[in-house]
Image 1 (cartoon, rainbow, N blue to C red):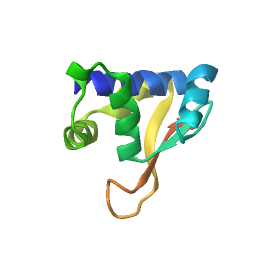
Image 2: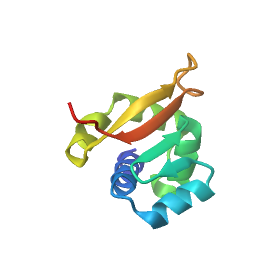
Image 3: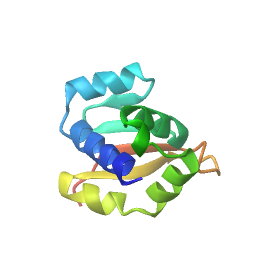
Image 4: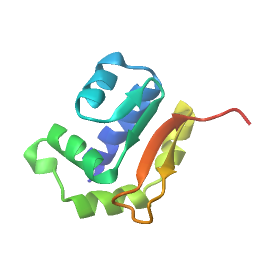
Length: 106
């Protein structure tokens, strides 16, 4: 699971930095994405990240979801001026919309 989580954090850092190549790839994969912003639902995020990994590092959606939800993602994104927020809470983790955004100044 560490592989998918690390890839996710790396992708977040790249989006926050405005990596045009990754942003275009994410858009091509159906995500709403721009420099500093990325919206996703967890099943689609898992599918995207899992496809990027070698077979031996892939994991089930449920293992991925549990690891992501219990990891300190925002703590790890804070030094990069980023955070993950719930954009549209639809009452279930699997269908709610999440987003990466830049931290706003206090």
